Image (cartoon, rainbow, N blue to C red; front, side):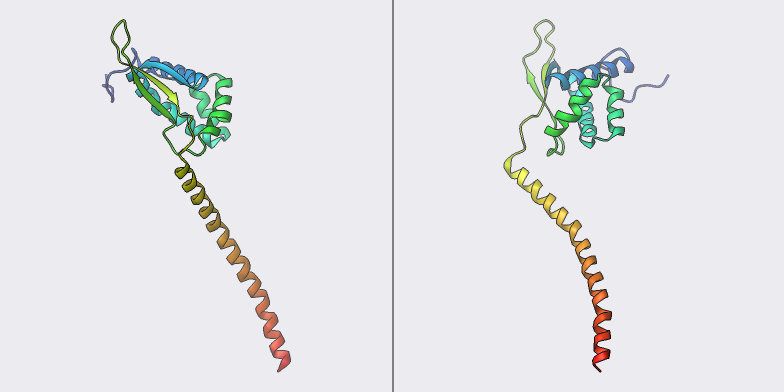
Length: 167
């Protein structure tokens, strides 16, 4: 029997772990924050951030890939409309893990994992806008040059013909 590639699972089997993470991701997108144990929060973060990245793409294929993990259509709708819109300017780091006091019964380390809802800092937002404007200008420049060259090409034969008539 092959040994697992990673360390011990959060649950008894990989299938159970996948289902637990899917349920936690659904709860996170429904409520904005959940309280869980620290190892579960650390395992949930990459999954949640990948799902938000799919939601930012917004196409049908991305929606179907998210639906493989999150089975609740209303949560997927909220993810693609509201959460993806909030995270549009962010390039990553959509979630935050904050450690809290250990659980009382078994002293397990607890954490709150939440979606980052604060906007980017003003400086980063300005830099992002400037880069977008530069990129748009760079894309328009070749088109403008091509139009100018086409106009010169049509004017050049006309000027040559006028010069020949003058001679």
